[in-house]
Amino acid sequence: MSLADKVFTGSIPELYDNYIVPLIFAGFADDLAGRVAHLSPASVPETAAGTGAVARALSPRIRQDAHYIVTDLNQPMLDWTRARQDEDKRITWRQADALALPFGDATFDVVCCQFGVMFFPDRIKGYREALRVLKPGGYFIFNVWDRIEENVFAYDITKALAEFFRIARPGSWR
Image (cartoon, rainbow, N blue to C red; front, side, top):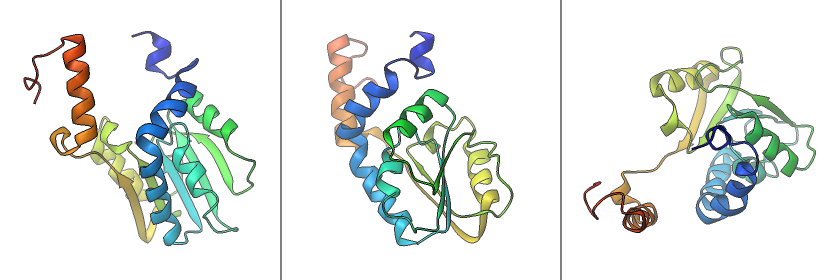
């Protein structure tokens, strides 16, 4: 894997957003955005925003006086999502590590993250950071995959790829 692939530079954000997001993540982003919007928060950081599927789904639904901070560890992914988003004075774009959020304690009503927490190198630290920046009574709303056997789409794709590339005997990677 090239360095560009590892850090999601070059055409990676565009390819990811144009092909992977509509196929897998757009519906989940819409669901997550609906859950956040239902709470009518005044302040929301999104961690691990990637190419902005949640940002595009949430921004039209948040309050007019809300402050929404879209963050990602990877600057090229953040640049991609910002370029795809209409200008909106309620949104701030910021490179940030979800394990060391650059925000004060008890600052936000809701913290949201779509399919990012499962990649945190230290999940407990990431959860503590979300809790630290939440106001008392705030919400940390995130989604993750279940085991691969419970995710039919991922299971079938992984099995097909494993068979195609002969990287494992079918069923041996369970």
